[in-house]
Amino acid sequence: MKKTPLWMTLLIIVFCLPVFSYPWLIASLPADAGSAHTLAGIYPFYMLLSGWLAWKAYPQRSYLSWILLVVMALSTLAVFMLTNLDQGI
Image (cartoon, rainbow, N blue to C red; front, side, top):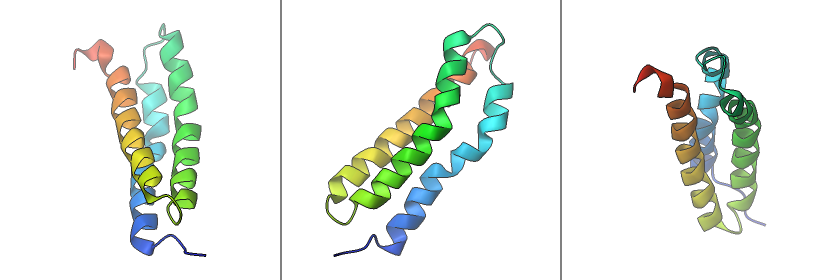
């Protein structure tokens, strides 16, 4: 059975790094944004699960890992845009 190469493991770790900005993410949300709080609360679990799934899928289905990485990048962009929505950015 093939293993996930080190370069892909490091790439997945890099894609998961925005999870560490979670405290800043929650602090920058407006107080009256209920659905935004829900999406921001799910975000770290989603990112870690997607990273793990991309790592597990790479040896047999590398294209699925790439798709997961692209969706992870897009969801990170969306969550950070959601937090900056009230600031006019």
